[in-house]
Image (cartoon, rainbow, N blue to C red; front, side, top):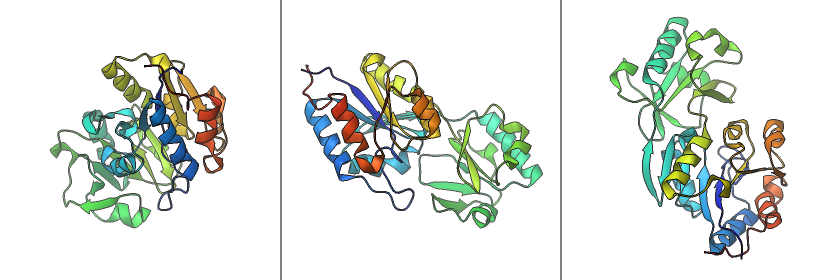
Length: 263
């Protein structure tokens, strides 16, 4: 009998292939997830996406557990237990600097699929299809008690002009703008494990991209996809094949995870 494991999967480039707007789950990935559930393992998604943006995909793949919002959101048994917001004062200071220097910006102030923007400039600059935007004339970050994410439109390396960005987590997935969002997936994984009273050494994480580095820590076992970035591969205990060439299936088979667990 095998040891029960707590498996945390990134979405894009790990479970899913194809990129935004063309995302699909390889057949062997779905087959692997089914066999892992049958074996008795604990399965969870670990994503930078907001809970609201990831919950449909979570359900489609049969998951009930998720680390979302870059590690700051936790869902267990289908119930959102909470999302830790960003440092409000630091975000407000960054927005004020953006206003002074002419950088278009947006905010996410609730668990939704819509960002708030003060005018059309952000959308005109980015032509973004990642999420919808709602114009709130006179939008002021001071009016909101919590801020979960912020978005600033500019091309790299213009973000270096923003002094107030220091001390805030941020990453760039699109050339036209960057995200100010949590980047500590390990934080959320530890919260789930602590909630369950389970041992960190029983965790296995699967990832591919720069924002997965935060969960590739020494507390547990780490699997990098064959299509992973070099930094993720350098931290991995196992490098499997690409997401579209049975990467999840091959990793799970190699690790013996399809064997029934000893309860």
